[in-house]
Length: 422
Ligand SMILES: [Zn+2]
Image (cartoon, rainbow, N blue to C red):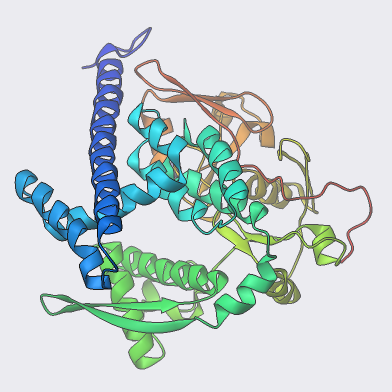
């Protein structure tokens, strides 16, 4: 029996404080290790510079030797050490403030990886510096997963070449390949336009869930079923695993399940007035040409009005109230609103923040998207949440910690009072 009758759960609070402190110390340790690797890489560079016209093989040897020296002392593989020397050198060279923030324990390795992933494609030094400053502001207080989606948009806004132009070139690199990974296993990859890749993943996820729901005794993990569905579909064209009469949710078998992606398009861009990119919600910017093709297939449109400064969603135009609210919440929340969770809104429940049974109203100021896991956590444990207005949620843990979760920015929308141009 834990004591939370009135006041805080002191044990939970203690675990949280110790956990945060241990993570901070561990991250500082990781950062200190990366600093050693960066310094060793710089030393390697220095030694290469002293060689007279080295071949590419000779130029690598000082690095290899230093990597092996450290690897042997630390019981690590020298290939791993050499790879991490390279990463650390890039971090020190391209994102010095990020390196400092990591060493101070303000951000974690995951944040560093996301900042490098989205910042490195920016080749202009000024654009990259601007990106880093803003990225660090956003990184503290959020998870690497959520930071990634936000930084993809930020990096896009700082790219000198328009997305449409870059996408046209990048499309040429689409393909499929296979790579052996030992133990009789191999990985199958396909490089696709982002819209198709996410729709493919969503479709096999829905099919895998349907299979699991139809047979609770199926011992496979969701990932294993995804893999089996992919193999079935690619080798036989249509899935061979039918769920049959057990399905009662209106799907006419797995073949009828369609992948869902949510795409937002600035209205003025769709009309050709501006060329802001569209966005695959919560994932990445996509080019307008792709968005316009999808727009042609869409059965309806939501017009989302957003504050141009904060990016807060202000209103969504549509018809019936309940469908209206669902669309509003999907646009405002984009994903589960538990701190750090990124489960997409179309897979979430719409939770009454103040329980309906306790008088909570069915209005967007009292509704938020929560995934199954976090809906249960809110309902069945001492976690509590309240709405502060503007879609901002204030979560209080059983240990008494308070976390503010703001809706993701939708700043790419252009507010206007004209009728929709479509
Ligand atoms: Zn969640």
